[in-house]
Image 1 (tube, rainbow, N blue to C red):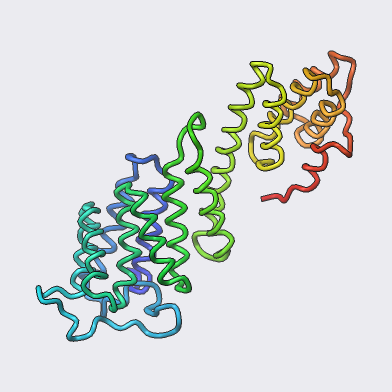
Image 2: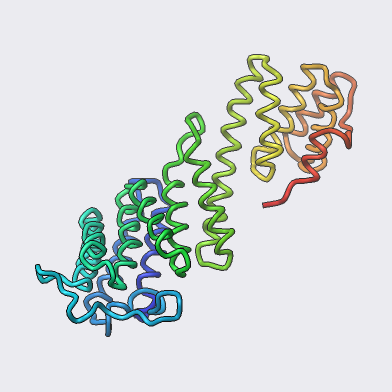
Length: 318
């Protein structure tokens, strides 16, 4: 069995990974049960102190976390340790609402206990498990506000990103939540590049970018079919400038070739095709763009002064 000072971190990772990558309502149950069982095992196996089940037993500033004071017992007989353990049991049972209430009660009854800090993050985690993402985000943000320098702030930021990520909808709908997910996940990478959450945050940020690019492509195609070429170009341009490293870029360049040819702006059409051919020579999108130019007696040719050429040279690979 792993030692107590890493138990909760392992549990959170196992829960978050399975929940973050599976569709809502279809989480991998065996992961959840195994993680909860691990948590419960540490709770009931008798760690020397309750403080031993969270990271390295310190508050992040080098000071040792101590269990609640001997007189830290509420009038109803509750203690911070007892509430924390009860919250763990509720998590194991899949009673996430009840678990959140137990963890919230720690801060209410024992605001100066070291477990009050941990309780906030566990509250956020419990809300996430029950798909109450707004509540999870609020709790995680509260943790960051109160303990911005604590090492577990990395997980709080990550949990915010996951909560937004889980709410991403079809590209046909408003993508405001996708933008928030991208912002939050990028923040994890920026602030905690060496954390265990950075890699997963980066992967999900890539998917969020791809989703946003897909939205622009969908709208751009709509305008293109209706011969609203300038409006279409603006959408495809955003893909090339803002989401250049996504899977939608080859099509965006081909669609730009189409739209500029329709407007009679041959130089830009040739540049879009040239950039496309240089970077995606085996793509069907390049074949389509090349065929379109040849049908008018033209060939791909890059104009170095074109916005397309400048955008391509200035991109920072994600």
